[in-house]
Length: 362
Image (cartoon, rainbow, N blue to C red; front, side):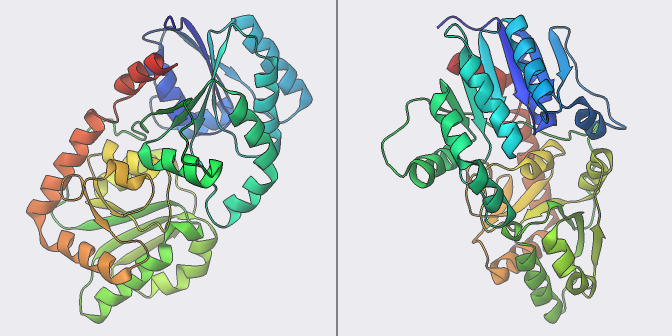
C-alpha cells in the first residue's frame, strides 16, 4: 500500500499521547487531530504545546448527537487515507468510534490503538463490561490493530480472543515519551522515590506500603513521595502517613507539577499487580529516571533489569523492599540505570521513530 498522505487521528482519551504522535506523523502526511481541546489545554497548562504546520486540531466533546454529526462531517470533508482511533473508554465515546467505522468508505484504511487489551481489575472492569459489545464491533471492523509490545499483543490474543491463532491485523508499536522536561534535571545526590498516578487496586499501592513498613521495622527510612487520587489513596492514606520519610499528596497534580516532581526524584516505582502499557513509565524515562517495577504485562517489554530499571515479582513486598534498599545504597547503580532510561527514551520511545514504523504498518 502507498504511504498515506492524509491521516485523521481521533483521541477521546490519551490527549498528550495523540498530540505527540500526530506531530511526528505530520512530518510525512497531512494530519487532522480530533480531541477535546479543553482537556488538551489543561494538560499543557504552563507548558509549551508541540505543533506542526501540517497538523490541524479540531475540538469534539464526544458527548452528544450533534457532536457525532460534526465528527462524521469533519472526517468526510478531510478525505483521509487513514482513520486512526485511540480506543475509547465510556459508552458514548465507544459508540462514536463504532459509528465512524460504519461510515468510513472503502478508500479509507482504519486503525485502532488498543491501550488496554483486557480491562484492569476493579472500576475499569465494570466500565469495560458495558462497553464489551461496542468494543468487539470496532475491534473486529478495523484494518489495523496497534498494541504496545509483545505482552499486550499476547493479552489480546489469549485473554481477549481466547486463541493462539494470530490476528494478522495486529502490529506492535511503542508508547512514546510523555511529560518531557524543558531541560534535563540533574540526578539528586540522595535516593528519592516517587509513585504517582491514578491509584486503583491494580497499581499495588498496598504492596508499596507493606514494603516501606518492612524497611521501617529494620531501621531503614527512604524518602518516598506518593501523589495522585483514587480509591486506594483514600483507603491507604492514614497508613502511609505513619511511615517515616513518606510524603502523601492525595490530590490531582497538574502535568507541569508532575514534571518537577519526576525531576526531583531518583526513580519512579511501579509496584503494579497487573499492567498493559504505562504512561507513568514513559514519563519517568522522558526525564531520565529509572523505574523499580513489577515484572508484569507490558512493563517487561520496556524495562530491562539492571539496564534502565529494576524488576521485582508482583505483589511481593519483601522483594520490593530489597530493590528499594539496593537503589538507596548504591549511587553508581542509580546513575547507570538513569543513563539507561535516558537512552531508552531517546531511541525506542522517540515519537519520530514510532511514527515512521506506524506509517509502514498502516
